[in-house]
Image (cartoon, rainbow, N blue to C red; front, top):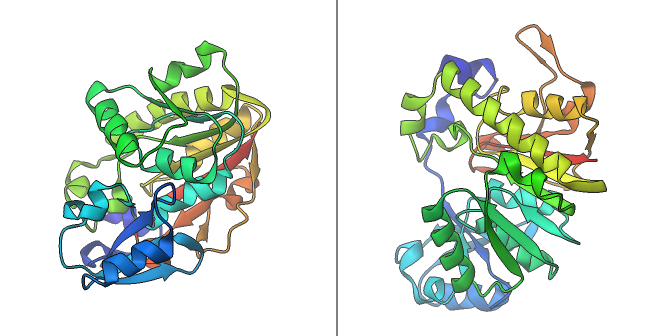
Length: 287
């Protein structure tokens, strides 16, 4: 709790109930048609003001994963803040989703680009879930690969866009996943930070010259966020503005006596109160 308060988040949000949210899968159905279908069944949906495919579920009459519309792949259950990284990526060209399972962001990329997507992960069980989700959602422009993210640059394939939604301590999800508070420790974050740096470096090296990397996590620690971006800057990455009109806070440039590159203020911290959603970190970088 002390660590969270030091970052300016407070703790009231941890016990706050969040509404569910969904992303319409426009590969199969348009937002208005799905909205009408679900509202005819007693649902109440509120469209996000900054993303026409996203809806907050104010009321539902059954579980999100137990509707005909879900089985048909008409929507994907996804937190509001986790829809932002793909928008920041502006996907086009050859695209890599380095840590793709369970497939939410991969399928979102496919809605915004018909170009080839490489969806990679390292765990067989998670890859099976990824494949099942992509099949349910009707995504056909994806090749699935299995490789440790930190080694992906060794393939020598160069991408126009890379998304790394990195494995993290998930502290931003504490309001509906309280066990993350019990398992977190400075040692845990330090261990994850080491892996994240290796994965982020590999993601950056997998870019073509001028290519874009979006790095994101659902955690709030500096060690897993700004620290990683500072490392990428040392390799030559340039932090870019995220040109979206969405409430957010700036990245942290001074923390516990350490100063990070000033351009890190262009990164986004999504506080739970910003969007009534999970805490998130998002950075857009160019090689």
